[in-house]
Amino acid sequence: MIRELKTRTIEIYHFVDDHTFRIPSIIRRTFQSFGESNAAESASSVAYYALFSLFPTVLFIISVASSILKDISIQHQVLQFVNDFLPTAGDLVNQNIERALELQGAVQIVSLIGLLWAASGVFTVLTTNINRAWHSAEQRNFVQGRLLALGIVLILALLFILWIIFTTVLSLLPLLEIPIFGTLNIYDTYAWGILSRFIPSFFLLIAFLNLYRWVPNTKVRWREAIGGATVSVFGFEMVTSGFRWYLTSGLARYQVIYGSLGAVVALMLWLYLSSVVVLLGAHLSAAIAFQLRLKDK
Image (cartoon, rainbow, N blue to C red; front, side, top):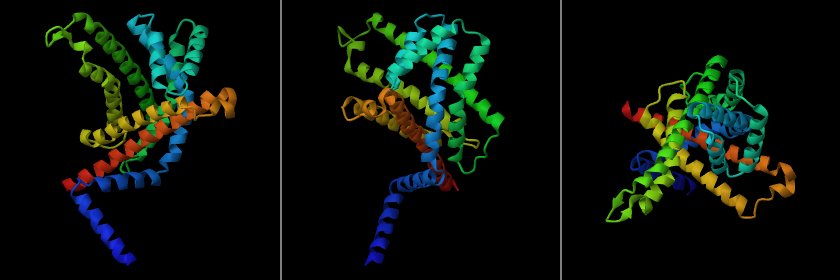
């Protein structure tokens, strides 16, 4: 009876697998690879390094963006972005960043290099673990890994500068008063509200897509990376929204247990869950690549 049930279950699995573009096989291989590489434990190390790299990264972005755009409001825009981005410790980060900027004074080249080096720590660990999702990828040596991490920090700074320019242009567009359906302004429509809501997710998708495409030390095609990037964006949004709801629901008791360290503990938990999402997306991209290349043979 048990053997017949097992056989029938396997037959159903293969039937569904054959008629759903191998999605069950991709999911099974994703979690199998995720477990074999101890990605859940690796996510904790990524979160640990992320905590120490967070402040240098924000300081570096503020310094570079302020130098390029020559705008005194850059600091406010970056801190506002961090406050919206981090559902756990926006106030904690803002207060410490503002204090650090006051003590730092004029930004020198040496201090920028120091910030860049400190900010790259988390990306060194992250790229190493993303690379492990691809069994055909060779591990980079220390110099290669650090150079790649430094490059990612510089790209993040560039992306944020583009983000500031893009959002500034969007804020100026309503002044054009482009009418549709008579006197209705296009920027007052529901469709425009939805579009503007998903613009941050689009930038996040671009970041994940390039992360999964270029970080693995092996050949990865765009169509193999897009699946993992899309799922990671949804997963990241779910983790952030869910965690924000959890903190505002009254269920969280970090302050009671940890006192003044409650915000730090909450931030660490959010960083860990976000790291799990990023690494899971990498393993998903590798699983998609395995199935696509198996089909191409």
